[in-house]
Image 1: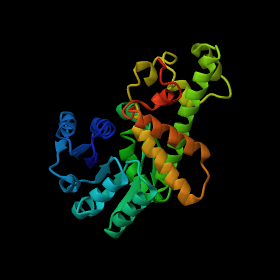
Image 2: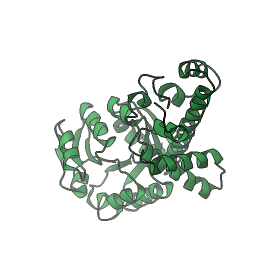
Image 3: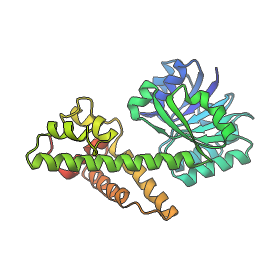
Image 4: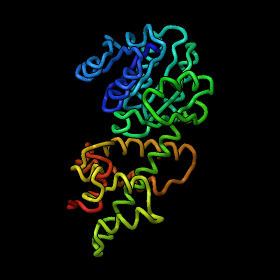
Length: 296
């Protein structure tokens, strides 16, 4: 089993770290939140004193951080790359901009290390259950080195291509998920206002051409799918403000690629409005509140 330094123990990183411990790995963990660190230490991890401490004496460093600036800071500003032992493999599972992912990988290579970007899909539920999907960018050899570690946290481990292409794949996926959430909300509200019950709408659409994973499992209309966050007061599996972050990443990438994303742009604007109305900490399915603020 491997020695792993894990940096970033938030809603996703905490359960991911605990699953690595369950898989038999030895963890040294760091987060700015002492409470987050203690939660993982209770599962058997060692608390690191700093980012550099977490990167020392380990075989792998795994990071799960909010934005690209954090990844650059942790790796490149007298951090992980300055402290890690030769041969340490770097795995960044943050969802960040492609440019930052590629910059971190280039800095790691220059310092003599190998690195994959490995953002995830599956939300907090998948992180808890160890069933995440990892979308990995990096060369094939590095991917194979990282894969056994990722298998301790996820079910689907996919090599997407060169450095940064894991991030590209992730933001394409999340752009589509945001669009689907908005579209599902529009259809459910419109149908109910025209006289069709929400239960009937769900029954028909979930077995017809309008179906989607979002519609079937995280339907934004309350009281249709018992396990959907919308049926549980929009308790987040994936917070709306994080969806907005990913949608903004998708729009920046689309602009860089010269690729038209009119529906992605519409979803970005809708989630921006949702956050401005104070629902950023609610689940993504709360996008229905933009379509019908009185929905219950």
